Image 1 (cartoon, helix red, strand yellow):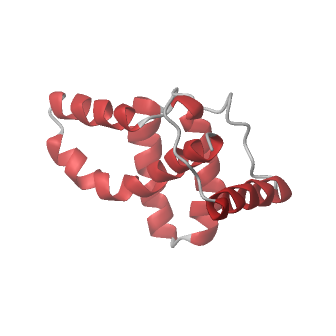
Image 2: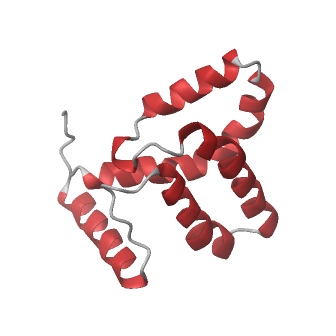
Length: 123
């Protein structure tokens, strides 16, 4: 596995984030956590408390209707950008290009969280 060299500042920020998650009870052990579990927790712990209700509803709709059926069983530690590319390709083949264009900008935010979280685990 090709690992990025992390600066000391990045390592400290990562450790502080994990400690914060441990303190407030939102830490999820990555080895067994699926994308569906992570996104469900993200909705509950981040989206609903911090976003406007309509925005959180939009994210919840995208996650429950599109992401969980398409990618939800993927282990968080195994999630890679290639999974998203395959998801896009499958959606295009199934005749849903408009759907991809419509929900893509909104689902980037919840999808970047687990990709970033996975990155944290490999420093």
